[in-house]
Image 1: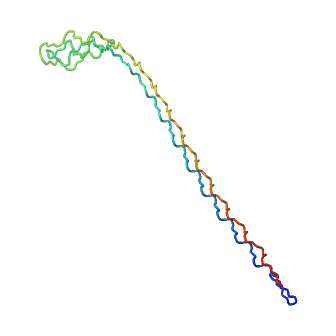
Image 2 (image 1 turned 90 degrees about the horizontal axis):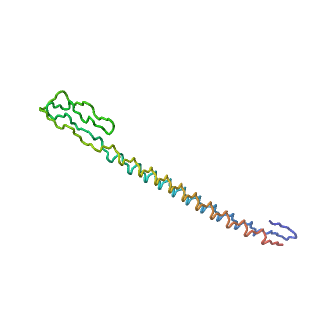
Image 3 (image 1 turned 120 degrees about the vertical axis):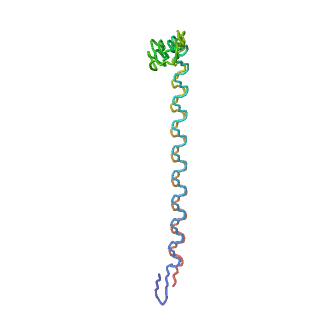
Length: 235
C-alpha cells in the first residue's frame, strides 16, 4: 500500500512494511509422524487355551465286577459218594432157564429176562424191566440136548449195599458268593480336571506401541512475523 502526497513539488513515499511479512507457515505440521492406531502385540486370547483335556478318565482303573475269590459252592462238595453201591444184592444176570443152544434154544423168547426179577435200584420195589420180555418168535430151536449154562443161585454183588452214605456233603466249605476285590468303578476316576485353562496366557487387548498422533506436531509457529521489518518513511 502506498500513499503519495504532492506538496511543494516534494514527493513523500510512505511504505508500510510489506517485505518480510510471512503469515505463519513454515514448519506447520498437522500431527502426523508416529501415529499408530493400537496395533503391535494385539493378541485375542490364544496361547495356552486348553478345553479340559489331560488326565480325563471316565471311571477306569481297578474296576472289577465281582471277581477274585468267587467260588460257587466248591471245595469238599461230594454228592453222595463213599461206599455207594448201586443196586446189588440178588442181581441175577440172565440165569434161570437160560439155555445156550440146547433143546428148545429160543433166541430171546420164553422166559428170557434181561435184568428183571428182584433187581432193585436202591428204592422199594423199583423194577427196571418187564415181565416176559420176548425178543423173538415161536419155537426157534437151533440145537439139541439140554445144554444149560448158568443155573442155580448166581449172585453178583451182595453184602454191603449202601445207598450213598458216608462222607456226603452238600456243597459246604469254601463257598463264597462273589466277595473279595469287588470294586464298582473307583480308583483313578477323574472327570475332566488337570490342565484345563480357559483362554489365559498371553492375552493382550491392543496395547503396546499405541500412540494417538503425537510426535512432531507443531501448530504453525516458527518464522511467523506480522509485517514489521523494513518500514521506511521516505520524504
